[in-house]
Image 1 (cartoon, each protein chain N blue to C red):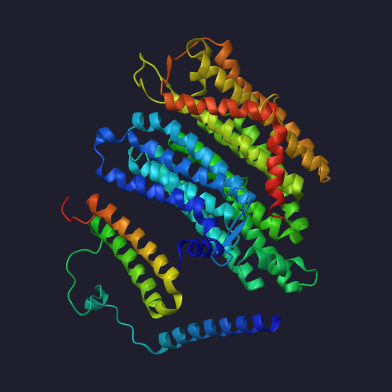
Image 2: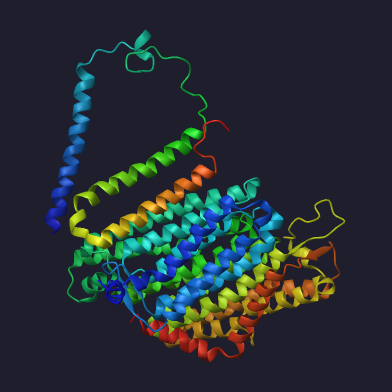
Length: 496
Length: 119
């Protein structure tokens, strides 16, 4: 067999579909192995090795951008949709690695496992977005979840971090069990676990009634598992504690990548394969969306810890995502894609600022993370650029133009209106109004108040580059949204 | 279709009833004399030493974990070896990938000192 024929054979077997996440997993292993033989003084190279892996994988995604391939017996699929989400995950991971390079060193967790687990988690998320088979999807979800369980407890000496990991692990295991039960029921009802078979067995109007009940029960169980990952009410109990206790950079990673992966899997399963159950799922999603938005925004007002506030804000944003998922259709789902992209920039940026700010000299705990909202009083006087960046992210998160958050919400709510969910859109807009209060409180504190506790911003160049990228992305999506919206629409069109 | 489920449910219920019945009949006829040696822990006829509520070395856990991993590897290797001729080069490469990932894990555990008993 000559080389060309071998390459052709591998291409026909669909190995191309596995290239992006395989590269990420391989670089994770390389980082893990390299760490074993590196001297402590050489550990600074670890984030750069991880970043190289991310860039390599992103290059492969770009190279395969216009290709379509189905591999491993119809288990994974490479198309524009999985390429879009792969890029989102890689973008998020790259930014988190940049933010971590200073943060991890200062907190004493700069170890190979940290970056290796980040990359493993990303490969799991990418597998979730490209899976077209329920068991493969579950595999991706578990790779992502197990990495996150360990990462959220990475501050082994701190009780809060251990608590975060334990809560996340126990509740996550429950959610996985629900999901697996749902998959088993789907298998029972249709005799196969591929999405194509699901579409075939439940798409026809004549499928037997008992199977219909089975499909509804299975969808319900699957929905619980995904809603847990998304952090939707009433499956949100882990979010505040885990986000607060986990290392700040990991919190950022969790809120972005984990959520986006859940949304991707949701669209592939419910949007593309089970659209015949649309009416039933929408009714459930409507309720979930309303309670998630409302609880997230209302409880965020009362928070005094900034990580906890951002945790409740991320619950609220899961609610907006659910609005788009309720609206369904190509408009609804492409607004999810745009939202996820915007969310990467603004949320990573906000957590990035939190990870770069710490208490300055003078106090008993100088050098500790400045996590109280009151610590942000007067930040603009001392660190003008950091405060300005934070202000941009807060404006974007509350959905005020000309930022990414505005257009993200605009697309979501207009998709809802177009789908006839006017009431839901109104509730969503009212919720955004509520959220303006707690986001703008941060801006108010930074610019209008006197400094209470001296805080010090990090001078990490990598961290600043990441923040600059987040500011740029937030503004770019807010000023020129149409080309990104077109990208989202094209990606969605590839799976319908 | 529905009848099949009923059949399975009937089977489960009958099994459960049989279990309860057997336990109940056993309780009716067995002699009861809970005393002396009969109340001690059963350890294959040996006389138990010490308390069961003792601390175990955490290293047992690490060893058990690495054992399980290689146990699973064997479980995958055996059926693969049986169909080796049919799966061809691709099957060979895939198993090589699987084994090398596990080897990597072994190298990691080794280097981290997880295989040493003394700390």
